[in-house]
Image 1 (cartoon, rainbow, N blue to C red):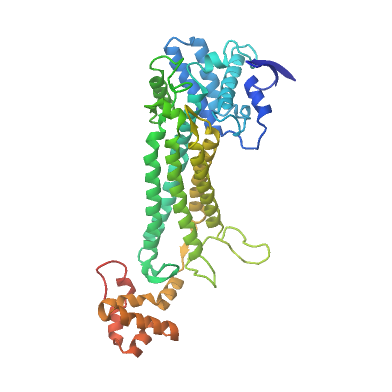
Image 2 (cartoon, rainbow, N blue to C red):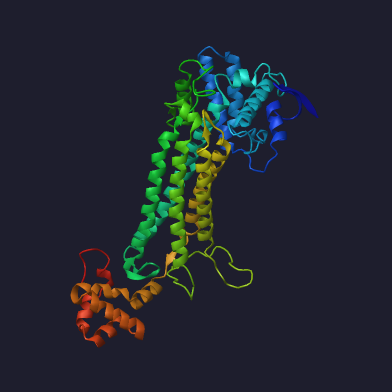
Length: 464
């Protein structure tokens, strides 16, 4: 069964049981591309805008109180997730997001009219353009929704997930700050380090990425709303931009403000590009952590085997008993995806031609995916890897005992050249450093014991 809906192009059949109208239906027909739906956080953010705009328009005397109440009620239902199935449009649509803005306008109007007892859909008593979209344009609504959805996702999902993973690593580092092991540079044996010191680097990397993300957020909190079509604010009353930003800040509990230059807010996306760069920084840090732990856990008998990764599932369909570093692999793949998303975001943000960037849907699709993947990845890695990871102290001690770079402790006592000869002899002849040093006659057994102490090689100013 269907009903007739109309827009500026004329009539079109719309399924009887949906709330949307003509423009949504045309988009479904004209953009049957892929399966990537417009992210729900963007659509919910658009509903927040419609609710805030209805309140401001009502206060200004530009919208009847009964119409404003109906819009708010319908918007609240959208925000509650009651109508998520009414947003079927894909990312691959007009580059301004016009169809998705109209999808939200039509759904809110269609539900409002039903609440008013006038049947589902239609344009009376609530019109999708004249009332729901009043004082607005898709060109300022959609970038505003992009910013709202982004800030909400970062604050609600990503920052808590980073804190959770960082906390788990901090606990691991604190427990093993005195566990001495071999350090490695260039993938080769180096001077000693503690496992706690090694893990502390991961915490610092996460902290740096988190600071970069937080530093990018104030610019994302600046909203385009009020710029309307090209940034001039045509058809929006004086003060609308400031009022709607304040209303959105109150509704969302976030420090949203009006963008100081609406022309830039419509035509450029530097704030989101900067945030994406910070997300890439986090991805880089997570890749380092995942790869390090994968290397340290390699083996169990033909690798480093210095840490024991949790055995979450069988690792092979052919090799019985094999356990793989699956959490490290998953986190690494997330990092790859986020780095790729950042490239797409950079390309999309660079395409701001004249008064409007028309690559907005693909930009926000990739940005929100990066945020969600990073949040899920941090949470999952903490829960299924870090929380159950334990160092193998015996294996670390064995590697340390065989390590040749302990010879570095002899540099202040016998000089670099003699120390290098000891290391070379030990390596070539399969000797311990002690035996090589004694055979070369460069020092006594007692001097070796006094000078080559791994625990004294962990910070500056301490040596034998």
